[in-house]
Length: 47
Image (tube, rainbow, N blue to C red; front, side, top):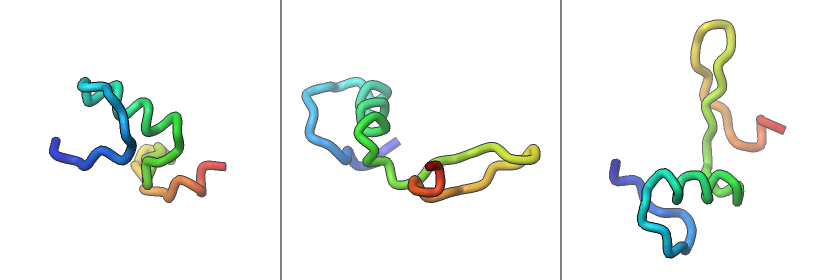
């Protein structure tokens, strides 16, 4: 969807790139579902 790649990788598949970014902890935001609504949280709020 046009988002910039946040890591250096040789992968071409956007889903694989996103999973690698998540595993490395570089995705800046996370969506958590609470009380039947979505809440935007910063990554550090998860832990």
